[in-house]
Length: 251
Length: 218
Image (cartoon, rainbow over the protein chains, first blue to last red):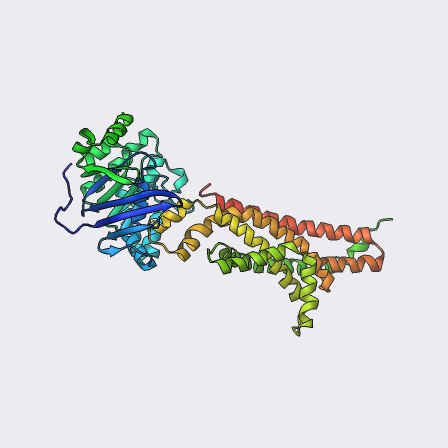
């Protein structure tokens, strides 16, 4: 797939010497990373390597212990205003979908645009319907999440995040909780999004997807970036011994 | 020996007294629901002094007899120069007491909502008040409804304690008529039946509410 990344633009994400500890557990040990607008980055690594934590630091679902995160020119710090500004620009998709069970599909999608962005209901519904068309679930607008399959729920969750018109989308193992036959429909939506030029960070175990869609693969191990580069290099000619072992295990 | 026909001519009075019982119950449930929500929000606020206030209130209220609380309000407040009539005294004491129990019910409901719900709302840029109001509380209330129903029925029965501060509710009326006619079994059984009718009515409403809330998403 052709890259939409803008190599010479100002990075949209800058992470400088990021550390994160949970009590005694030092999960991130100095991560440095930049992401260009339009770039698709796949984060891979074994569980406990810190890849999900890194993702969750980017919209402050985790506080950071040390270091700096700058997103679209806004520095993430303790100020609530900045956090909410950044969260509006950064969409997130979770492993467990986390749709709101007491709201219909449409209500799930229009909730934040109406309450946070103060859009009119009419406008929010219009955007939501366009997004539902895009993920192929327009006919489910009045359904409650429990009645939907995991794949459908995840597609709705993607639409919900997109309704905020984010500049960056974070995906935290978006297909890990899905039955194998439902993975494809979710990856299809993500592939489409990448093609449209969305900046995406995807924590994933789907190496096929990483190879096909990502501009860059980052392999994390023990809280640091151990190896990174274009997928064909990192996934076919890994330099690090550990990455070779990791990829070997997946096969 | 037993003569229930005796009760017949007192029925209008007993029904009127039942209405007072219902009024006490409904008003104190309303106070309890509001006070309880407020207390639960303090209790989980993460702000130490506020949490301590909430915990203290719950600890004292649940740890002392309701009767003591009612007597304190009715006889204690006038001693401090605050005049209070029997009916508001009973409602105030019962509502204050219910608030502590409702607070714990709310809290259990709120804490049963998965963390992922809150994270999803946060990631959409929603702030704490909005998340509470739109995402957490609507779900927590559904979880809490059965426990709130139980507490409401307990409250309705406990309203009989208001008779001890001279409110003419169902218990007070029954006692009076039982004594003057020397027909204790007749009047107390009638009172019991009237309480049963009211609690059954409460249960019925609650069941309806539970069913309605569960149709869409459970």
